[in-house]
Amino acid sequence: MRTALLLLLSCLPVAANAARLLAVTTEFPPFQSAGPQPWGLALQAAKALAARNGDTLDIRFLPWARAYQIAESTPDTLIFCLARTPARETRYGWVGQIARNDVQLWRLRSRPEVAPRTLAAARRWQLGVTAQDMKTRYLLQHGFVMNDNLQESSDDLSNIHKLFAGRIDLLPFSSSTVLHYWLASNGLDGKALEPALALPAISGALYLAFSPGSNRQRAANYAAQFRRLQQDGSLTRWRAALQLPPEPPPP
Image 1 (spheres, rainbow, N blue to C red):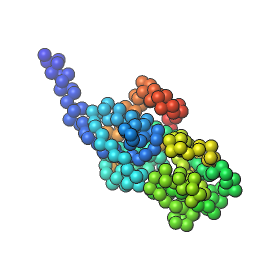
Image 2: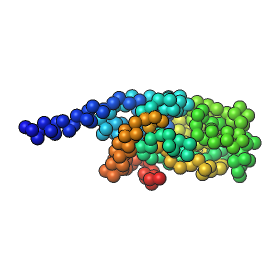
Image 3: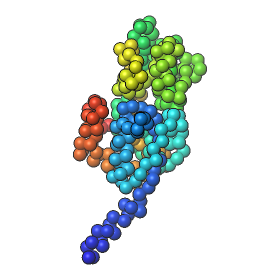
Image 4: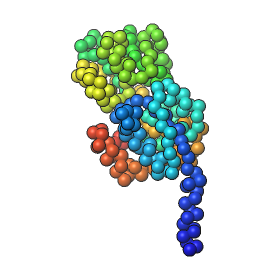
């Protein structure tokens, strides 16, 4: 009887620490999407991590600028998929790498004259960017000017349509996997686009992360459970079910 009571009491701290947490994200299929029912690799991982930690998630799909603004100002918020940049390194609680971030400038294959050999050379063309995105900030830091050679939209799909309509010349995009998913799911010809210039300086990895000011122990617990998802094969199985490339190596 005493042993059973001790076992019961040992479970109480987990229940006491359980929380309903806000999670913010944006449309980025096949890593996360709101419809027709919420799905995607990052979303599945986030839900599994919350369950393993005894938490529940209030998941909100928002324009990226709004999702990022909430994360910047609201502690204990989970955000995904977030690029791990030097400016964010010590401010966010990094849970786990979920996707590759292979940033490139894309052009219409029918427009070979749009051929920047350097980022500086790309300033002569119109680029479509997303509000509050790290690619936008990077371009602004390298001599691009909003409403001059940068056109801002609230989401990736709007910029894809702008490229096909000839309203922009180049499309900076974080993930070739996501780009080709958007093209296929919207009836657009994937062969109509090709990379024009790679941007390795801002390529790397995309993460699930906790916002600035979050409980450090909670972030560490989620990171530990993420490693278990890797070790027990859960992430590998989910990737295979979504026909995604193999899991990226750890940083």
